[in-house]
Image (tube, rainbow, N blue to C red; front, top):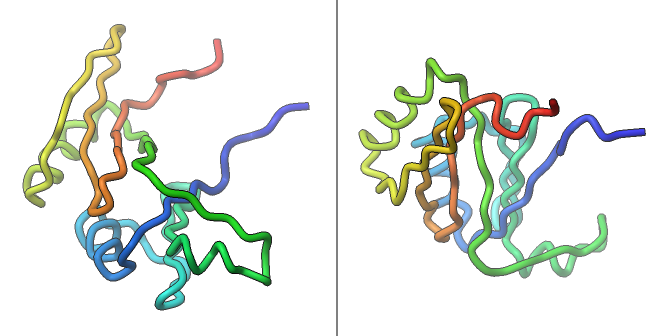
Length: 131
């Protein structure tokens, strides 16, 4: 038995409008669901990025309560052909790139922050693939 992939990834944010402006307006992620003051769900390829206000989801009675804090990390995957286009887009949006890393064998990634200082990464397809 094995899992196919991680379907959802969750980040806890402090301001949904600010997060919406960043993830939807700047990065272009399509909105799946939005409940003001509670959550914003965005499509990332075949996965979903969940953005919750931690204190609201902590008190949930619909689904099990969950919450977190701190600067978390997620990575977005893109093709080698689109990697440079993403770097250009991030720069055009005046989002500071903190670091670019060469992982060897042609794999590159770069890091930047969202408004809540979560560490985001864009990585070239093929990293960590099963042999």
